[in-house]
Amino acid sequence: MPIAISDPDDPRIEPYRAVRERDLVGRQHRFVAEGEVVLRLLLKQSRFRIESLLLAESRLETLGEELNRLAPEVPVYTANRTVMDAIVGFPIHRGILAIAHRAPLLPVEELLSRLAEKALVVGLIGLANHDNVGGIFRNAAAFGAGAVLLDRETCDPLYRKAVRVSVGGALVVPFTRAASAEAMVNALQAASFDVMALSPSGKETLSHVKPSRRTALLLGAEGPGLPPELLARTRTVSIPMSGDFDSLNVATTSGIALHHLSRDG
Image (cartoon, rainbow, N blue to C red; front, side):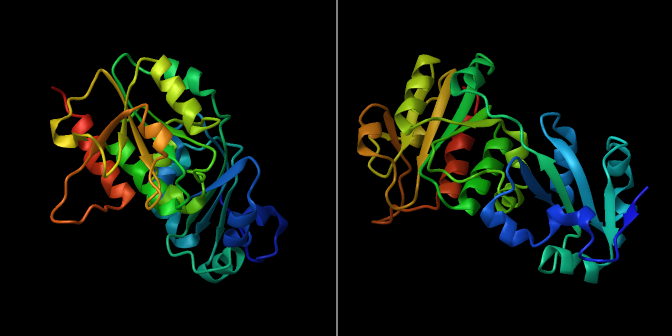
């Protein structure tokens, strides 16, 4: 049964208090999922354990089927909009929040070993923008990427905003971190991946590239791009553009490239 919350200072909903500030300081082994679509995807992922839900009273009726799938011990808290906004610290228009526990990250080699013989992997190097990371995970889920690898500098894909922008893609596509960009490439090559690095100076044109059975697509931050030493040891691929314009948003770039590389034949 839903548990009504009328006091924003109720200790039972402490994990939801001041969401934006908690985003900055971190939640240890927890993360926040926000919105109906994200919640539905979260419920389908066995590797994440849901700790609790906080819902606006108006959302209870529309989420009946989803709530029936929760484990009996998971509390579902409800509040009116005024109380919920006071708890969260800003107007939470979607009226749906969940606290879930992170799954332990696998070693890169183990994650790659679990992929099918035919696989597409994305590698992110130095991406500090949560919107871009969320957008890339959305594209990775849409085009069937088997995994996303992150270097140490790339931001957290389970940051609340990244999960929201990914529309739950960050919950669907398995990911882990490599010790460095070099270690990432080493692991991919050892697992027989054809490693392609996207760069405006790429020697090959994307439209002329035929995907391999195992293909890895590397993406760097807008501006600095991928490190020269990494470009020197991988296939470099470019997306031609009109005139002298050679810049696309990295999330947009990932969608174009993943669409091409996910095609059969």
